[in-house]
Every structure is written in structure tokens, then in C-alpha cells.
Amino acid sequence: MSLVPVDTTLKVPPPDPVQEPPKVAITPCEGLPVRYYFEGGLRRVYPYHYTYNTYCKERWRNRELIDIFTSEFRDREPGYYKKALESGNVCVNGKPAGPHTVLKNGEVISHTLHRHEPPVTGNEIGIIHETDDLLVIDKPAGVPVHSTGRYHYNSVMEILRIQNGGAYVPRPCNRLDRLTSGVMFVGKTAQGADRMTVKLKERTVQKEYVARVKGRFPDGVVVVDQPIMSVSPKVGLNRVRATGKEAKTKFRRLAYYPPPSPTTSTSDEGENARPATPPPSYVNESEGYSIVHCFPLTGRTHQIRVHLQFLGHPISNDPIYSNRRVFGPDLGKNDSSADLDEEIIDRLMAMGRTEVPDIGPVETPKPKPALSTKPPSEQPSGEQSTSSDKGEDKDQVSYRTHFTTPPLLPPGTSASVVEAIMTKEHEAAVAEYQKRKGERLSGEKCDVCGTELYTDPGVHELGIFLHAVAYSDAHGEWSYRSKMPSWARPPKGVEGPTEVPKWVEEEEGKEVVVGDGVVPDIGVDEGDVAKNEKRKGKQGATALVEGVGMIDISAARQAESEDVATAAAGTA
Image 1 (cartoon, rainbow, N blue to C red):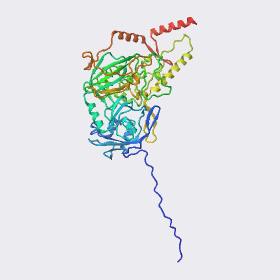
Image 2: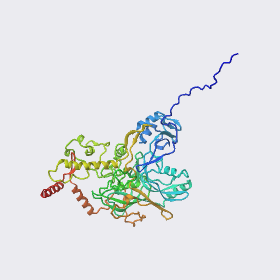
Image 3: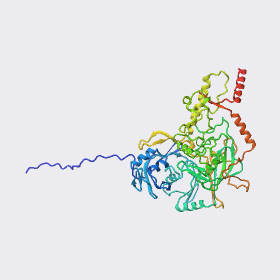
């Protein structure tokens, strides 16, 4: 028998084609270890996949998912949520759900997506006091306390957890608004958090804040006893309402600083600097500003901010309650009605997507169409009126193009010289506008999930002029204070307080109480009224001139120009 060679090589069937995993995960996942990086004074997080798990809220019961997602959440466009629901990216109790799934009490909604967190200030979290089970911190402005909305790793609790390397799980004992800075208590153990939380709920705890507000705040102690109601949780709007919850705050002015001269510099930052916290910029402070000591006796959401707005002295850079584009020129002073609520909510919904909160320099008066030499469509973009007879265009972003009237020059001066001067001023105004521009949709999309991306937040979105300066026990058992923030200290070359004193009660009968929906004219004497009337008389009339902007055409201004021209001709 002949031998036949046999091939003993192991035969392995070819492997099946390997399918690439989807770019967007649709199963619950916690994501890769967080990766922070710092750029432009901001703390940033690389995008990552994340699953939101939320219990059904009371107001969500018996509602369809598509209704809840499109009405409650602003992070993405309604079309994204509809597609996510139709694709099975949303689960209820671990099972894929559709757009018309009706939620019931106790159910858990899970939504996995590619998460893009907004950047926050790069400033460190200050440590005021620390024990084995408690941490007293000085929270920086602009950082949320815990995971909320588009923020997760860029929150105080997550930053502390990652910084301590897992040595303990930080637990907040009190909370501050994202835009507010100041004293906060964090438990390092469950027992420590429970003990401090119980203390903070006792009526013996005293809280003190310091705020920087619009205009000259009245003398003495002003007590605001006005109930507050949540008007729209979606946009975070709270207003004074007779049907709201009891709220009471005491205020005392610590200092008043008049407006600076036009030549005074308001910032020491370089041309390309982007400060990580609000600098002492003169926003919404054409009448100067006051530093106010605040003593809340209740703890309603936005209580201090709402009460200050009601008094007519809102926090000067508050993107909600000091926003003329939303509330108009009176900024909601003494307004407790619901007549404009829907309009206000619509305008706040537009903020962050198509508009910049109007908390900057004094708005240029709206010109009358008859005074313009060209129709609005042909006017320069920075000089168009921001409204029309049919209503204001909520999608238009305006900025002030000229901060002074045209230069006083002798008659016959070449038009090219005037144009060069005004062009330079216009460019400076545009540059200033770009610096205060807010976080908005950039027009770009993520190449992984296709969501629209935002620009970096503006300086005004990284914090407001409100600082929790102290928490203490009324019986003196414990007290923790932080330093006065830089924006509350006196301007360079001006005397004023550099520390916030401990709150001292006013003598009985000397407090001015603002309650029952009535705001008296407090702290205004005849001299102040006369000065204001005189100032108004000097403002005169204005007109919009092509290539120049708003100019003063009052008789006083024309007489002044003639005097200067005559003097110039006499010296020629």
C-alpha cells in the first residue's frame, strides 16, 4: 500500500465580519473616567456618554414622554427628543419606550446620550474650615452644587469627589444657586452631613449675603415682606405673587458708588483676557451701584434676587431679573401681576440660543423712524431699531455702536476725518460686545452625536453679584464667614468697606417695611429728585444718523456746538 501525503494543517473557518460599535451608546452606561482640562480660565470636560436616570415627577404623571421631553427640557431641540424616543434610546423601568408612552408614579426614565457639559470657572473651591466629618467651603460663582441639567462632572460635589480621590463621598448640607458664590457646608460622612443639615434647618441659623445692585439703595434697613411663587421651573423664573409662599428679607446699604467718568477704565484685563469670574464691570449701572447687606429670614428660591428686583434695585448683572430685554426699562419694579408672564417666559426661553441678556451698558434710546435717513433694512446692523410697531423682534441681538456723541470739530471738517473717528469708536464697541457675548448655539454640530454645540459662556454667565458671606448660630455656638468678593470692594482710588460687618438689628420702629404689594418711595429726598430731573433735562433729544449713530440734536447741544465752532474759528 502506498503512502499518500495528508495535509494536517488546522483548518479554521474565516472569521465573521466585525461590526463597528455604534457611535452613540443606547444602553445604560456611566461613561469613561472623567477627564478635566483647563483653557481660557475655564474648567472643561471632554464629551462622554452618559445615562440619565430620573424618577417620574408628580407633574409628569399620566403624561406622554414626547410631551414631557419637549416641554420640560431645553438642552436640545424638540426634533432630537422625538428621534431619540422613536429610536428606543429612552427606557422606562429598563424597557425601551416610545413617544406616546404614558408615565406612571414610581417609574424610572433612562436616557443615554453623548453629553457635552458647559465649561465653568477654573477657580479652585476655597476651604474655610475642615474636620473629620465636615467641610466648610467658599463656593466659586458659576458652578452648580450638584449634577443638574447639562452639568454633571462640572459641579461642586463631583469636583470635590474627584479631588479627594474617592476618600469620601461629599454630601451637600445646604445649596446655593449656580450663579451665587459663598459659604457652603459639605458632609464628608453621612453622620456629619445629617448633623449639619439639622442645624441649618433650625430657626436659630442666621444667613448673611452681600449683593451689588443697580442705583442708590435707600438708607436704613428695608424689610421686604412679599410672597414668592415659582412661575416657570423650566426657565427658573420666580416672581412676587399674592398666592406665593411666605418670604421675608432685610436689606441695609453698606456703600454707594456713583458712575465712573467716561474715561475711567472698568477693567485691568488684557485685550484677549477672559476672566473666569465676573470682574467689577459697570453693567446696568448708569446711575451708579450700591453694595447691600442682605439678611433673609426665609429660604425661598431666588428670594434675594426677586425681592431686590421688586424694590427696583435688582442685582446689576443678574441675567434674569436685571434684564431690560425681558422686563423692560422698569425691570419689574413693584410688579406682582401675571399679565406679562407668558411674554417674559418666551423671552427667557430665547436667552442662550438667539439672544444675549441685556445687562450691559445703558441702552441706546429707540430712534423714531422719521428721523432715520434710510429704511431699517439699509441701516448698519448695529444701528437698527430693535423693535417695530408690530412688536419687538426677539431673535435680534443688538449692541450699542456709539458711546459718545460725534466729536466737536470746526465747521467744514472733512467727512473722512469724522468717519475715521466714528469707525474707530464703532470697532471698539463691537470688540466690547464680543467680550460680553453669552453662551449661544455656535452653528456647529458634534461629529459623534450630531447635536448642536454652544459657544463658551460669557463673563456675565459665570456668576452674579451675590455672595453668601456668612452662616452662624444666633446663640453664638458657631460661625463661618468668607471674605468680601472683589466686585463688592471699592473701586480703585475710592474709599469704602472692604469687609462685610456682622448684621446688627435696627431699632424697633425704624425699619421701612415693604409689604402687601405696596412699595413706597423710600430713601429719596427732594435734592435727589431735583438732580434727576436736571439730568433728564440735559439728555435732550436724539436722532439716528447714517454712518454716525445716535446723536444729540437738542437745542442745548446745538448751542454748545455753535460755541465751540465759533471759538475754533476765532483761533484759526
